[in-house]
Length: 293
Image (cartoon, rainbow, N blue to C red):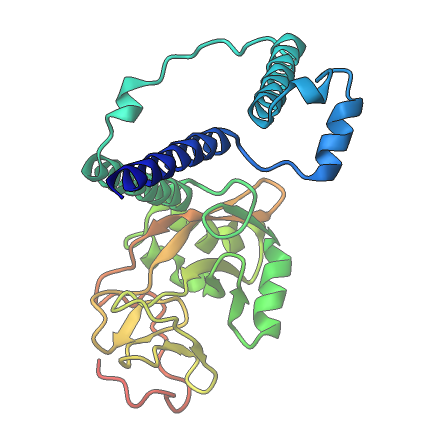
């Protein structure tokens, strides 16, 4: 019995070793070949005689073919395009941290803002040479301007120069020479120089108190500010209210042929309180209340 048991154990060991060897050979292959695959491999000229090849050898042959094909593709790609020149990276760009990026962005935005503000300031202060407020405006013949003033009930408004043009009486010129500058007197004396009924004066529309636009009052024939009640006679001399002086006016020039030009880029400060060269009183009810002389 002992000998029979030994023989059985030996047979079982042999079977186990044989099975292990077959399993190892099967694990070395990549996959299991079907009958159709084996039939195609037998007809292949690359693999040769399938009967002489194992499954592992067939798989290795396929891997070698794929590697060879990939190498050919790589060589073809290299030969088709020349290599790009090497450009070393900028160390400053590589070394920019998050904080440096935000700091530089903030500085750039500040520079853009300051630059825009500077350009806007220059554009605001730069004299306008193409016409409009801030430039010299050719109004026309003094005789024609006087006709327009009288046709507008004594007050001619020019929006392009932000100014009022009114008539200055010839009889007040002598007093005006003691109170006004030469640039103002040119228009005031135009009536005497040209043989007309009166001269002209160009008055800035803004109230010298707080800058409101001052309209005319048809009934009183004065300028009366609707904001705080300042009042001025027809030539812009202060007659009442909180304004610190009379209305500002522009420099004027009259050519030899009688053409009036108003320089809206040259603003002359209005006459001081108490100046009243024309002696004009309110010719009717005031639009902003009673005048306090």
